[in-house]
Image (cartoon, rainbow, N blue to C red; front, side, top):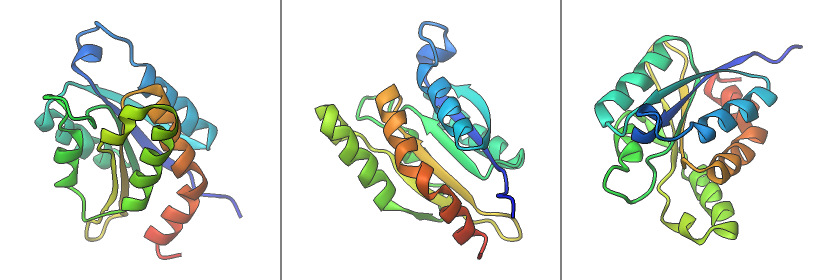
Amino acid sequence: MTRPVIRATVITVSDEVVNHTDDDRAGALAERLLAALAVDVARMVVPDDPTQLLAAVSSAIADGSRLVMTCGGTGIGPADRTSDAVAELLTFQIPGIAEEIRRRGIAHAAPAVVSREIAGVIVRAGEPSVFVLCAPGSRGGVQDAVDVIGPVLPYIFAELDGR
């Protein structure tokens, strides 16, 4: 039996990347790591603007993504509103995933303790459920996030699909 292909969208949330004053290293890493897990990945970049972020998440879902991973905006700075915005879309959260990402981050970067990543599911009547992860914008945070979700992605989607 072949494993179904998971379609994903990685959304980098960064004014600097949008304005070309920084490179999208975190989004590129997320794409590579997810592709290595046989995930079909698309990428988007949006500014630190909740309205544009929510539009990007909606667009990714409309395009068939079952996994939406954001990179950036999970800190405590004035523009870090990714988790707050995305939380409003979630039907329920999966706190253990965010807790484990934070735990791993703290082991090598003390500031990870104030990171506000979240994971959860958007349930839509008559449509497949969507797993959403708001990950840090650092490469270390992205690595930790994919290391946490990678081994359980098949289980997550099996559960969401009632298998």
